[in-house]
Length: 104
Image (cartoon, rainbow, N blue to C red; front, side, top):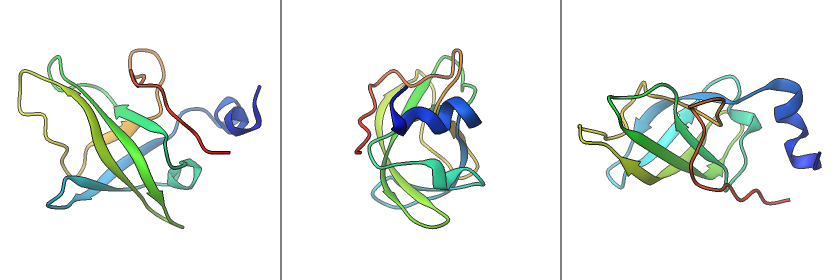
């Protein structure tokens, strides 16, 4: 297994919460596992809102936060990313559709 994926094998999927969303639709994420994120990774909604699908792409990682932009969305309902939404690197049906690009 490539080194950059070893953490996910050993510790499982990352789950983070949206703390805020700015006027440019950039989400600030927080949670105990936020330090495991890397720029370029994709996350998807944990759970669903109707039949909707949304992904975030990590753009910046700090010591206790990460920032991400919305990159893929499909929903017949209101599907804006909101504070309190949970996102994950995935497992089962909660798996990002887009291919993540992790910088080594």
